[in-house]
Amino acid sequence: MEKKIRVRFAPSPTGGLHLGGVRTVLYNYLFAKQNKGTFIVRIEDTDQNRYVDGAEDYIFDCLKWAGLEPDESPRHGGAFGPYRQSERKALYREYADKLVAEGHAYYAFDTPEDLERMRQDFKTDENPSPQYDLTIRMKMRNSLTLSPEETAALLQAGTRHVVRIKIPENRQVSFHDMIRGDVQFDTRVVDDKVLLKADGMPTYHLAVVVDDYLMQISHAFRGEEWLPSAPVHILLWEYLFGIDQMPKWAHLPLILGPQGKLSKRDGAKYGFPVFAMNWNDPKTKELTEGFREKGFLPEAFVNLLALLGWNDGSEREIFTKDELVDAFSMERVHAAGARFDYEKAKWFNHEWIKKTDAAALATPVKKLLADAGVHTADDALINVINVEERPLLPSS
RNA sequence: GGCCCGUUCGUCUAAGGGUUAGGACACCACCCUUUCACGGUGGUGAUACGAGUUCGAAUCUCGUACGGGCUACCA
Image (cartoon, rainbow, N blue to C red):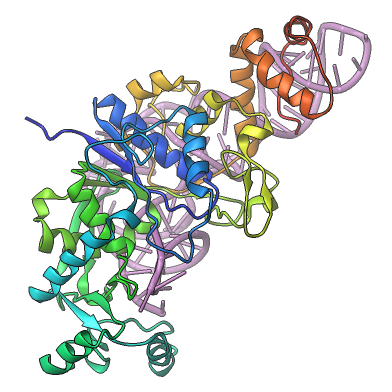
């Protein structure tokens, strides 16, 4: 009996949901539905500094609009909650302490200033960004260099500290990626990542492993930017739960903008939307336009995202969501990054507008017109839509 | 700098040893059309480079180059 398929999308509520995020959601969703599995959304809100009010609501609104709603989440319930990491805080400490007790992690008392000084002192032309790793951990203030008594005293006194993973000195760590095949790392070049922060919150590295285990995740899909930290996660799986428990991984290719990784910040600069829906940043008061408001139909948005880095091997490009559920396969996802082409995106939308009947189009068109100050009767509008041979809905 | 990933038309991609290297978007031309679009037909356009394996390489191996990502008490 195969393990039950359970996948998750784990966004952090720090702002708008961009293209790449929605595509990750989509691939998770398609994979789950195809395998009669469960799609989970887990909120990774472990960084209090980056938390943005309203971002979580916004993410769920985007998923609803795109028709990619999860089976389990803080909003949809489920037996594996809580689904917000901030509400699971106490859990992580226990695993961190276990790692320390077993010699796989240690307490570090270095202040941010200490770390800054270390980076300055060890910086050379050959090594412009020194790591807290095996070559320098014995020069820092931590439970490896301090006596057990000193460490105990510091802990007792409530000294601010973090827990760092102790990366083994000379090991090859490898795993099989569903898209890239076997990937191998040498632990000599992996640094001692922080697992538990001074505020008691876990970092992503600890939280993702603990929660994927506790939530019985069978397959973990995430952006390619996570590939370099995979060895840390693999080691944690080995130490904590056993490598045979680890989910199958797939690192999705990045969606590139005109120059490099599509970033949330550059929102407006590209001349096309990067977010699924309009995002109003509560801090900067900045409005970033979304595909929905630009006139994209959710069916088209899903379709174009699916084909950005994946195809079914035929020359077909237009798929409904249900057809995607049948046709999708992670192994056919292209390994190379895909540059987003807005012209092609508009073509997808155009195709969907042609496919959609006039009555269904009336509602969004009416809203568009109303926003522009034009009010119409439904019947008249439907007639116009039929007569006008479906011009492009988006204005540009 | 180090590590990891990648490299087929401008862009998204097909072709998993033998094809005139296929399709889509964009672009160009022509047709349709009272205008602009839409639509139709056709066209320009790619295997990064160098070795090797093989009767035969876009496809397998190695090197080089280039691109991207990571290198935070962010995810």
